[in-house]
Image 1 (cartoon, rainbow, N blue to C red):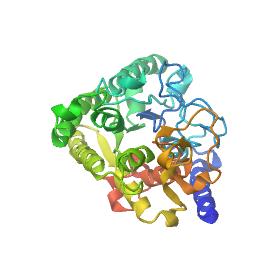
Image 2: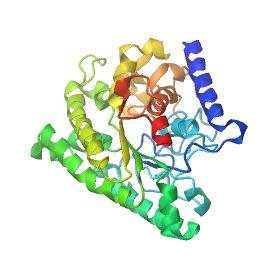
Image 3: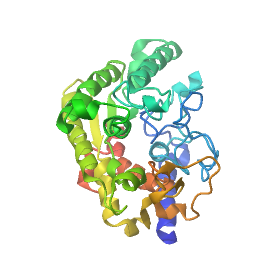
Length: 362
């Protein structure tokens, strides 16, 4: 197992080095990130919220220690940023300097969703609408920095945007009947339609403010997380199928959204099939260097998933062999696998229609 993990690390290092060797510039001028706790890297640190990760043991394998990343180390967007050739990780929007806006910032916020109320039981968070508004503010600053709207538009048209929303609309809304009534008001089909209908105008706002190369990161296998296994799986191993089926309905609608936007002038939208990538990993975890797929490395109770990783809790030692870091979020090892396949598809089903490496070249 150690050999496989070291091989992954070597591949990542080689790809990153290849992208930047001889002082080469990144493949795109900037990278902007939208999402939730899967990619939040510190935007929630200053928010009154239970959805924060700026304490040990989070970041135990990250050079900067606990930063607000919900993992032991790198997130998928950290991996993607390196593969795109950036020397530094994309910084959180909170506290970002004007110079940092030129190369992109991360707007993601833990507990955020497409629906405004999603995640509210956890406290403060920056909804997708709020993230789009922050991006619009950043674009206005870019116009001032670059001198005019045409210069800003030309730069933004070459940048990569990744948007990963929807997980919390299921995990912290539809499948949380103690706090939300959406499951009583919508069938899974209706809910997927509603999410897509709310998503599209906000993506349109990104397009209106210059976003052209946009990757929609599909929702992963929420029903396979240690928390859902702990609370809803009879044997603690079998994924909760009705949750994954509902999520896939939303993912299917994202394919249509991609087609819809790709009819617009200059638009290059694509879909990253996170659900499919995870399914492939779960079919043969050993071949991907993973040994434990149904438990969190750090957590409490059944599957280490009934309560998520607590402050200063001692995590497992063999983190590189775990798919999940805590009750909900992947380890760095899993994020490396997913980030690599988002950048350079291993299977044709990983992306629709192109991977991020191809998107950068368009």
